[in-house]
Image 1 (cartoon, rainbow, N blue to C red):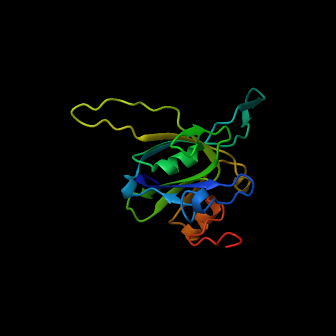
Image 2 (cartoon, rainbow, N blue to C red):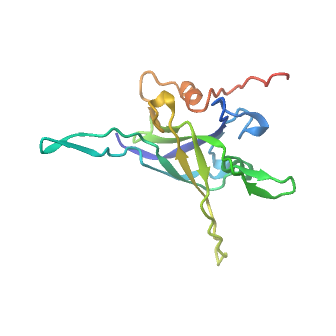
Image 3 (spheres, rainbow, N blue to C red):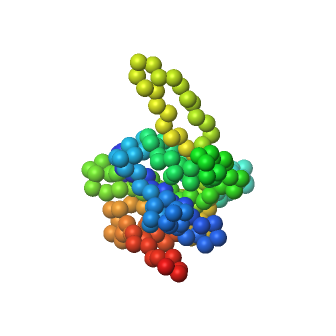
Length: 204
C-alpha cells in the first residue's frame, strides 16, 4: 500500500534499566513524549534504511537451497526544522555545565522514535516504530546569510537496537486501519508504558 507525506514524529527518552519512559523535568515533556508540531516547524523527512537485510545464501546439491536468517536494525536519517534546544540536547546526551555550556556525554541516552505517514486517502496512518536506540549529530554546516537567510536544520541520525518483544528486531510497523489498532496501546508499547496522564512520582 502506498503512503504519502510525513505527518508527525514522536520522541521520548527511555530509562536504560527499566525500559520505562522518562517523564517530568528529566524527560522531553511532562508526560515524557515530544510530538513534532507546527510551532516548532515540524519534521522535514525521516529516511529509514536497513529495514530488511538479505541473508547470506546457502548452497547444496549444486544450487541455492536456503538463506541465513537476518535481523533488522534500521537507522533513520531525520531532519527537523527547529527542534527546541533542550529537546535536542537531551536526546543527544549533551550535559549542561549550568553556565550555558554543553558537552557530549560518553554514555548516550536511550531514545524511542515513532515516524507517522499516511495512506493516499489520508484516512489511515502508518507508524514506523523504534522502541530503543541512540541519536547522534555527525556535523553542522554553518554558512553565511546572503540576500536571504541560510538555515541549518536539525539533521540527526537514529540507530535502532533490538527489542526482545519484537523477535529481537529493531523496528515494528503499525497500521491504524487494522481492526485491532488502538493508538494508546501502540504508544504505551513503543514508549515504555507511556500514558497521556502519567502517575505522580513516589513521595509527591
